[in-house]
Image 1 (cartoon, rainbow, N blue to C red):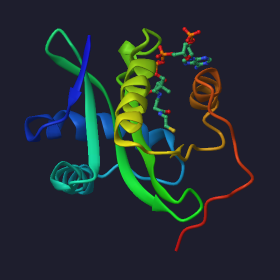
Image 2 (cartoon, rainbow, N blue to C red):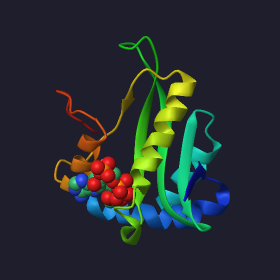
Image 3 (tube, protein in one colour):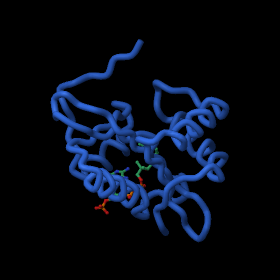
Image 4 (cartoon, rainbow, N blue to C red):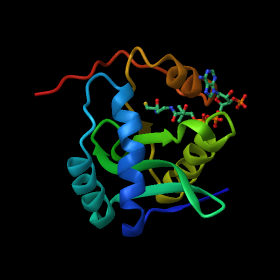
Length: 144
Ligand SMILES: CC(C)(COP(=O)(O)OP(=O)(O)OC[C@H]1O[C@@H](n2cnc3c(N)ncnc32)[C@H](O)[C@@H]1OP(=O)(O)O)[C@@H](O)C(=O)NCCC(=O)NCCS
């Protein structure tokens, strides 16, 4: 298994993986067309780093990181999104490998904080993040 930067050739597979993720998260609805456009934009964005986990040539997981500027941090921080491992490949260390890869990339880029959002009812993901040392904050998410 290896982690590498996503390319345009991965878009169909990644759209299908995002279907799995957005079927779990109550705030989102899977939509292959929107997922494809979003992925194309991420691939073209200079401050975004979308990665895939590949097992014997097959893409089995993904995650993305986007750089933000934080006045609280006085510099650049990172937003991690789109973490998903194909159902039959879960529990083999792939999710952790994706996160570790993004954390190393963020360190190299000098990002001083990483943040992410998770569905409050997604207990498996919350247990996963807790095990990786992520902590919850007093902030809540709002949208308009
Ligand atoms: C969350 C997810 C990415 C984890 O990926 P994974 O490849 O299955 O996780 P890993 O095998 O790398 O697990 C890493 C560690 O987390 C733990 N962990 C993983 N899933 C867990 C669960 N459901 N409950 C408790 N611990 C869990 C593992 O036991 C492992 O612990 P270890 O470090 O002691 O060995 C994966 O379950 C997934 O794709 N879920 C659906 C999409 C999703 O919810 N994404 C998160 C959106 S916020």
